Image (tube, one colour):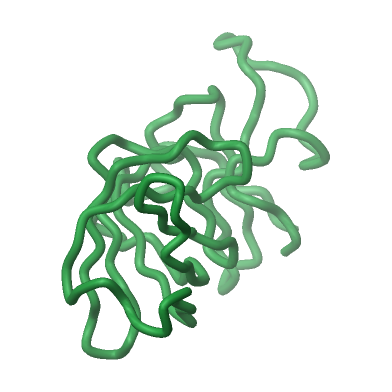
Length: 146
């Protein structure tokens, strides 16, 4: 399924419900071949605070510390977001943002900064299920078969 979480255009959902808001991709269920869509730019399923990233590359060749504070971006034009980064035993990191982020997308990159200095980055693997605002998509969104 070639959709990005938070995507609004090109998902093939026409019309509006009584809410009158556009539809957005909230989740992809590859096992069921279903796309979970929700209405509203700020729907709870589009908001997360934590991510797990892997395949990390550090500008200095190694991370600044086992746990450290910095700023990060998960989208190109996004403002720097304060966060805490903790190295995991498998070589990945857990990134916990101070504020809720919109549509953190597995497969995209997270990039770390300390002021104007780029520390490095990695590929977003997933958003931990317990971090989802609503963990049962059927109760909060509509599944479309791809």
